[in-house]
Image (cartoon, rainbow, N blue to C red):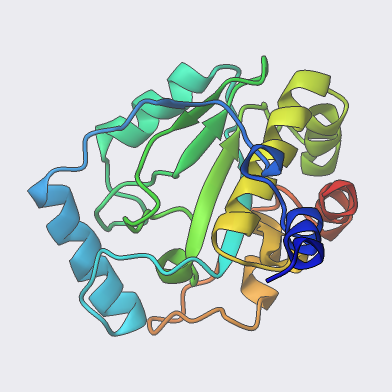
Length: 206
């Protein structure tokens, strides 16, 4: 090939250092064989497949309803029954109010964080007390520069990694209406954090 072809390739190909990046601290919660078995049993009951593997098609945003990330991590680590079933809840990533991003569970493992989509969704917990107004709580996150910057950077990395469109980012409050929602036992989410308006603001910044 001529030099012209080489130049075109250099111009049109995104260099590696231009790819979106985010500093992620590894802080994996216990996910032993017992918890894996519990997750596989849950998946069989709710999705019809005994598996602990997640196939990312959605990224679901959550609020921790706590003031610190450590409190949320302790809750996930405890692996206590929720709605009478095990395993306990968890999420793949957690973003503290100072912008620190921690990965709690590998992307490959299913986490119980959203009814109807656990088998195809990664979960991101954002540290914020919810109170009586979930929308106002999300707005506090969006007004917190370090935290929202880390959220946008992490979302950009995950969307790029799994080749997902921006509308793959949804809030917990939007899960029941998602076209991919499935729950064989008829369960529904009752959470109201991260609704369409707040998620729309996040998507518009990506």
